[in-house]
Every structure is written in C-alpha cells, then in structure tokens.
Length: 251
Image (tube, rainbow, N blue to C red; front, top):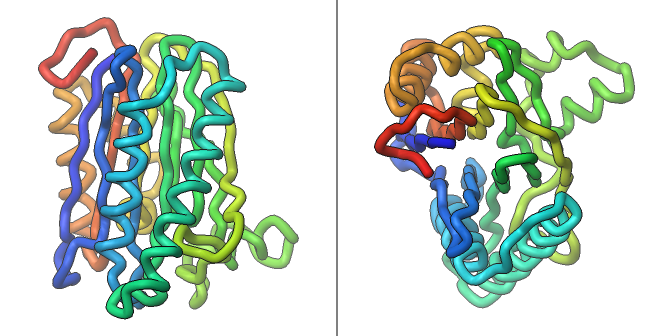
C-alpha cells in the first residue's frame, strides 16, 4: 500500500481553503482525509484545517482497527466530535462565526476500506481502470437526482450545484454517511474536493489515476488537468494504492 497527497490553490482563488493529508497510526494503519472549507463562509480555511488536525490527533491516539464495524464506529464518532469542536469554536470566536467545511475520510486496512463523509468532497474506488463513487454527496442537486427530478448529467450544470445540505460546524448531530468496501491488489482509493470532481469527468480521472507513473506524479497530473480546465476552485487529492510495489510514499 502506498499513497500520495496534494493540495493546490487553483488559478482563481486568493486562498486555499482545502486541507487534508494521509496519516499512519501507531498500529501502522492508514487514514486519508480531504476537507474543503466552505466557500462564501467566514474562516473556511480555519474550519478545514481544524477538522484535519483534530482527526489526525484522534487517529494517532486511537485503537487498532481489525473489523469494519470498529472502523465505522470510530469514523462516525470522530466526525461527530469534530463537528462539535468546530461549532463550539465558531460560537466563541466572532471572526469564525458561520464557518464550515466538508470532510471525506478513508480508513484503509489490508482487507477493507471504510469511508465517511459530510458534504460533497468525494471518495472513489478505481479498479481495473473503472471508477465508482463510494460516498454520497450531501447536496441539493444530488437530492434532486435521487428523487428523479433531474438526471445526473443535468446536475453537473445546475445553477445550485454548490448548495450543500450538510457541513461540519453545524449545531447538533451531523450524521455522516459511512460505508465499507472490500479491496484487492491494484485497487486505488481516491479522495478529492470538488475542485477536482467538478473539472474532470470520472473516466478521465480513472485513466489518470491508473497510469504507470509514480503515484505523486499521477496526483499532480490530475491537479494540472483541473487547472487547465479552469481551476476556479482549490483542488485537493489523496490517493491510496493497494500495490506491492515499494515507493518512497508507502507502508
């Protein structure tokens, strides 16, 4: 298993409000995270960084995970705890009032991957150059797609595409979506902010992620393509590849 992470400001934004990383706990298990501070909200960069730093700290002191049910319980409780931390910070710091962030996180073990998300930052699996979105967007347009009011292709160009139904930093429970999948040799887990998923279609994403170059180069290529396609938003990617090939970024 090896991994790569990259976060880019993009070509338009004055500030990178994304955050993320790939972290290894004392048991040698891996957690990948991407958070996208809410555009139009105050202190979005503070919210995303706080979320990532908090989950990194929880991961560093958490238990060894051996079963999907343990991973799902840990991820759900951790995301709820982060939500409380962000909300409490926002109500006690006027300059952070109304701040928020998305989050997508993946616990990657040898046998399975457990993903949790709030908002529209996404988690995909790429297997034999075929891609499938694992996470569920908590967005207005996705609710319309699920109800059958619009098609998935219509959603790509909907004027309210960026309207979220959930984000971290809210009062009360946030109820993240949690799911577990099995993985095999050669599979790739790709987490990203919408600065990538809004600019590159899934088939091109799968093709780029599956190339034979080093993983960090593949991540850079995806970021460069998103920038070539406009780069209107921050772009963040975390990739974990299930491979026996040993690279500098691996475990």
